[in-house]
Structures are given as structure tokens and as C-alpha cells.
Image 1: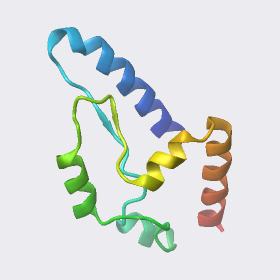
Image 2: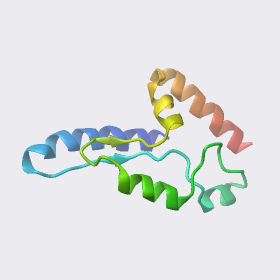
Image 3: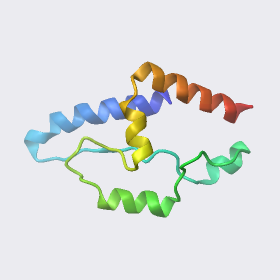
Image 4: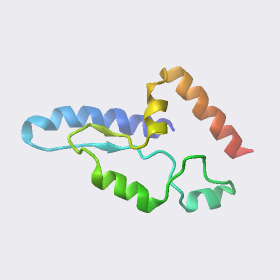
Length: 99
């Protein structure tokens, strides 16, 4: 999760730095996507996980002018939480996966 946080932060910075040159940079944060990752981890997909086709469709329909694209009501609500609370929630979810 730390690497994902870095990518979001880095993408925001690049978005602003590249804007004067007509280059558009965005970071797509689809939330959980039902991929083989879950099978390899031996766990069920997270609640609210979408298929890769839905994730791709959401990206295609998104506003690419934004620095960060977050589809879905649940994902957007999660981002409204204070970062400390979000990190605790993510840590809790990850512990369930590891068990």
C-alpha cells in the first residue's frame, strides 16, 4: 500500500509539472479489482471488487483532466476519511488477507 500512496503523490506532482507543456498525467485508483491476485493469495475478493472489464470501462469514461481518478461511491467515500483512519482500515483489511 505504501508504493500505491507514492504513485498517487508522484502522479499529482507530475500532473502539475507537465500541465504547462500540454501533457496530461493522471493516476487511476479503481479500488479492488477481481484478478488472479486473490486466487494466488488464497482469499475471496474484497467487498465491492469489480471485474477488470468494469475497471477498464470506468477509466475509459473518466475525466482525464483530473490528477487522480477514483471511480465508485465507496472508493470516493473512503478517500474522504482522514488519512490516519484510512491507513488503519487498510491495515485491518490486509491483516484479514494475511491470515
